[in-house]
Length: 338
Image (cartoon, rainbow, N blue to C red; front, side, top):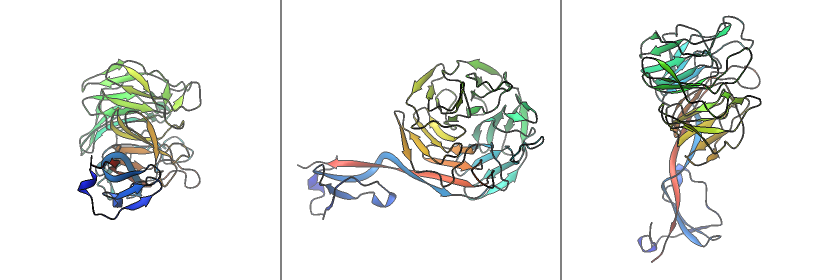
């Protein structure tokens, strides 16, 4: 911890409360007259981030899904008609370079609301909803094209995924009719799908730490059975689901990013712009999306995330907007004297 003798001679500003740190305030030294303490803003504390506009998708769509990072992502499938008539499921795929989206090879089966995971050069999509039915089909992306893989055991839609092309997890969803939310989970080992321990809460359209591993992740929110939506969150350690702190508000069909069960970001949801950060202990509300929307694609981590497409209130219903979440770590430290 810094000592007074190391900063003696500086003119010190007085504040009645601690500021909200921004990137321009790193290194600021001040006196909090309310607490009677000298303080300094340094790297390494709670995440303070914001959303900024990125390059728009070339095709407007919702219930699309993504994987990768903020600067190297894939956005695939979805729907592109507000009424979703037969044939509306898209097989369109776009690749993001941090600035703009480019069309790449299409998926073999047009679908929406599927599980997705991986990187811009090696990804997997599984299940979802295709024309007139839930899907069990699985496809792999190698950076150039798509190939079919072993089908999942349980067809379902509004399912979520994480992991890699050789070690993935597909979580929850539902299989209409009837519209029964599921707590089924399947693990992929590169060769076959195996059912693993059920979640404690049945849910579809949840958020997940998309870039986490298949043995260390967190799932949050979603549409439950019985309805409506939930704020419940559970972490997966590779063998067991454990309930942890709830989101600050219940929501479903939001975006989710993150790299583990202790680092995740939840953003958006039906008609919602709210963003919440998970630090392994609690959820904290942070800066909102500029555009309130649900059924959107996600990519990235809790500190560098991507939100693309989705469904928003008003007209047009389906969107091509992209937003980028960037965060730096800051900490307000109390300075001791000697």
